[in-house]
Image: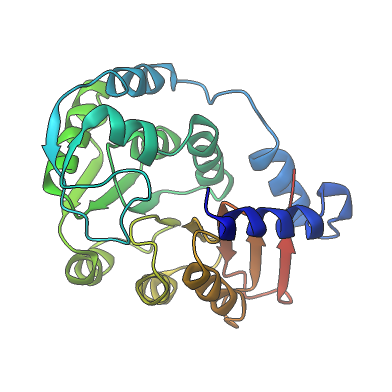
Length: 260
């Protein structure tokens, strides 16, 4: 792990508070209902079986990497199992996003960064009567994800291929305001800020914007600090790996750094 990320983890551990140091009823409930549970969400066993199959998949695909790249995988030709091992959300993180979607009573979900489709499946199971739009810049990766959607019988996932710079404005204009937007596709400062601003412009009160890997690099940390300072970002929560932004405009601005 790069020294920057080690130092970021140490700073977080030294300054974060647990649920007993939280004086916001809303955040206290979020910790108890979203962050602390450890049991897998009901109805996701088959998704983890699909993950296990991907971890054994020896196919090579041609990867189009439109983001900041991978620190562990190099070259355009990559094995599916290596992508599954290094690029997918962990079961714990995917389950947390599932619970978060249910916590905000999501109906419309946007994911930026499909990868092989496992997180999109967790989100789709959280909103069985809703809509999930997932975006991916790599056509070959998205083709594997579509296989997972079909295998899981999830037909209310809409997959959009292309560069986020080109596709995001149209996606946001074509769907109802996202109740949950998960930005996990371009780990660089300027694109992260741009995608955040576009999602925030469409966010409704009560929604949540999730940013992955907020301490991945100095640039991502700068982006996160600017987002925390955004007046529209009423409640912001630093979980170290992820950042949560709630545009709850009716309450005072608060920032939390949590361990749970």
